[in-house]
Image (cartoon, rainbow, N blue to C red; front, side):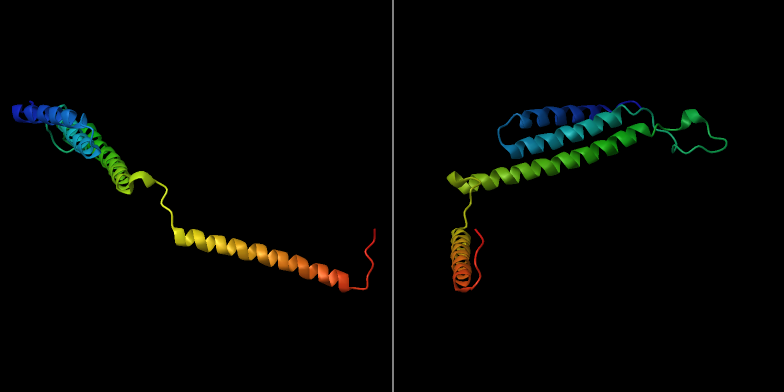
Length: 150
C-alpha cells in the first residue's frame, strides 16, 4: 500500500497537536493530548502495514503473496485496548484531582463529626460497663464464703 498523503498529514497533525496539548498543566488537556497521540499511533501502524490483500485465511489455490499481513491489525487492536486502559486511569486521576481541589484545605481529611461523637459515646459506654462489671465481680467475691488462697 502506498501511503496516502492525506493520512500522513493527518498523522503528523495529530502527533503535533497531541504533544503540544500534553505539555499543558491541566490533567484534562494531558488526557486529550494522550488520546490524540494514541490515534496518531494507530494511523502510523495502519500506514506501515503494507499493501492490502485478501483475508489471511489459507485455502487451496491461494497465492501466499496476495494475503495481507494480520500482525498490524493485531497491533492496532492492542493499541486501542492499551489506550482505553490508560484513558480510564487518567480519568480517575482527573476526577480525584478535581475532588481534592473542591475540598480545599481539608484535603483528604473529611471528618464526619456525628460519627466521631457516636464512636466516643460507645467507647465511654464500654469503659463504664467494664468498670461496672469489675465492681460486680468484686462484690460477688467479697460476698462469697470461699477463702482466696494466698
